[in-house]
Length: 275
Image (cartoon, rainbow, N blue to C red; front, side, top):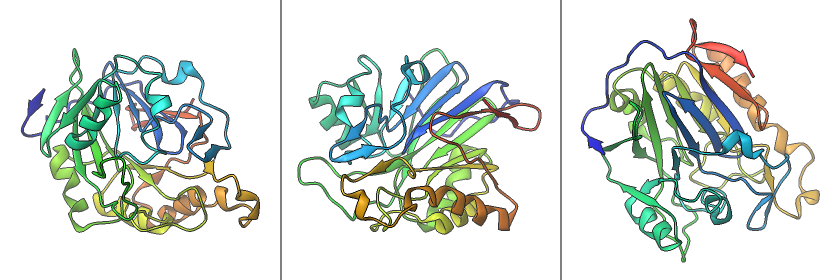
């Protein structure tokens, strides 16, 4: 582990790949490391059901580390985490302590601590999130996002959060401009509780932090069993609404992926296309 300032940017490493597996689960392959965010790899998370197919094991196998933003069941699904034995699970200290008691190889990070993926120049740290509206009595309630800094690539994974003023400091914490923002734009129902962002709020945040590209997550994947009573089409609206909101600003490029779809980053113009 290392702590202190983020490393400076090197020329972009070609071939970095980002794959969205649905909900808040993203696979980031960069700099010889594979990072997996908030893994939901099974058909359900508690009572919530997955609409899209279960992710293929080949798309998420053998990660270098797992990033867990908080312990809500749709972000810290123990059945999915137990499919990754021996993989370091990075989380805030209290959350890591709880995860370790569940038999996982949890690593607790301090507020300003950088963790280096062994054998690589890829570093990870926590950043704040505001997500306290649904506290759990049986799990710790710390919530954070993450910064991932690799040679030539800086990524912000927001976790679940409402907007907060210090988001503007994220490029400073990352040591330079953000290349990619992974931002939540919806939920598992048509109404969002506090501690979330709707598509317009998420677009505004991406503009504020100056990200080059933005990938909407936390939409179109999970639903409650009683979803037949909900307004039709609600699951499909948030991602396109986010892309439209960004198009109006024209400074941040939206990357609208389907579950399982990937995009290569770090080429001559930073984006080589969907794969």
